[in-house]
Image (cartoon, rainbow over all chains, first blue to last red):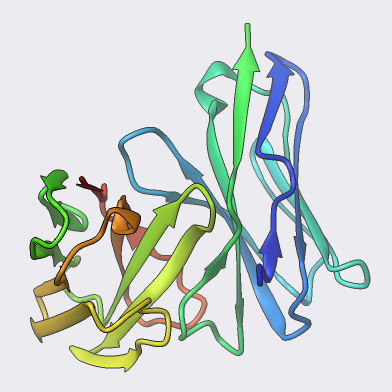
Amino acid sequence: DQQVKQNSPSLSVQEGRISILNCDYTNSMFDYFLWYKKYPAEGPTFLISISSIKDKNEDGRFTVFLNKSAKHLSLHIVPSQPGDSAVYFCAASEGGGADGLTFGKGTHLIIQP
Amino acid sequence: DAGVIQSPRHEVTEMGQEVTLRCKPISGHDYLFWYRQTMMRGLELLIYFNNNVPIDDSGMPEDRFSAKMPNASFSTLKIQPSEPRDSAVYFCASSPTGGNEKLFFGSGTQLSVL
């Protein structure tokens, strides 16, 4: 049973517009959330994270929002650029995360010129 | 820093053969993780080590899968015998201290079992 769900396998956005990637989770014990970005033939790389004590974290063009009551988080990319085309994985951990991360299936973001 | 190094990048084998995937973590990282990526299940944690000791192997799908970490700079994931459903991308990742530290992934091994 998927504890971290990314229900959109793909998303197409025009260059310069906002990209919004969504993620839902079922495990209420998760207290730390991360987004990873993956290009073809490469491993995932860390993008941005958020602790459950916050509801927003921003890093340049990337912002992650957390809604604990809805068990939902989203990644906003604005403005979207061609280099943002990649697969984005949502991940979560609980209790310090020493047991590793639980990942979603990923969303393939395509930025159209 | 060279990052996490995995070999081989691609492996094509026939059903029933033994497959060994290799990983060199980032020096100084105490945690090493093996993940498998498939279309159906995304990225799944198979097993992780802390200071070379296996801590949780509950994600290992079957007894055909085994992993070792004989020292701090090397780990292997072995499948014996391999089956077509094992075809996937296998990632190794390391982390400095575990906890909420982000993971550093290798480039993965694309395994195809015919």
